[in-house]
Image 1 (cartoon, one colour):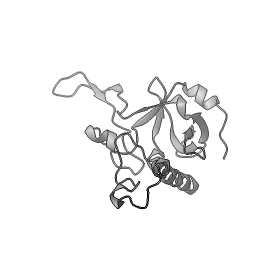
Image 2 (cartoon, rainbow, N blue to C red; image 1 turned 45 degrees about the vertical axis):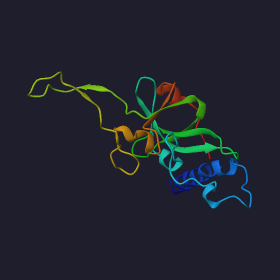
Image 3 (cartoon, rainbow, N blue to C red; image 1 turned 180 degrees about the vertical axis):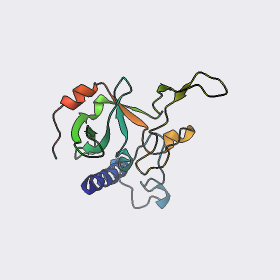
Image 4 (cartoon, rainbow, N blue to C red; image 1 turned 90 degrees about the horizontal axis):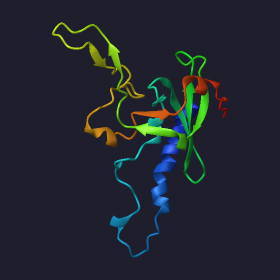
Length: 173
């Protein structure tokens, strides 16, 4: 597990340096205020280190696993995400790599309705399932307007059933 965190940290570092490498070199007479460095996370940017543990669902809103790694090529292009599927409390889990272009991302939490007894004040008895909104550090994810600036999506969606993911070949490092 420490190797996965190291890999994610290195991926984050590599992805953060790509915009600086893509810019034209500065001339010796240019001012230091136009240096090719970033000073803050911009809207729509994600931190690779925060992708570890992001939940992955299918189109039926069934959780099929969570992201355990992000794979990218030497140019910095993300190739795939590795999803930990199956198992219980980390035992029996296996890894499946899904091509990055096969994944949809959402900044909005999964909205599932579960039946509960009607509250004493009346009402329908339906409630929003908020049971799994903690991030990898255990703190509760925000659902307010700052979702675009937190540095990671709320969840990923793949167009596969649980059975298809479980039957997929295991990814080996």
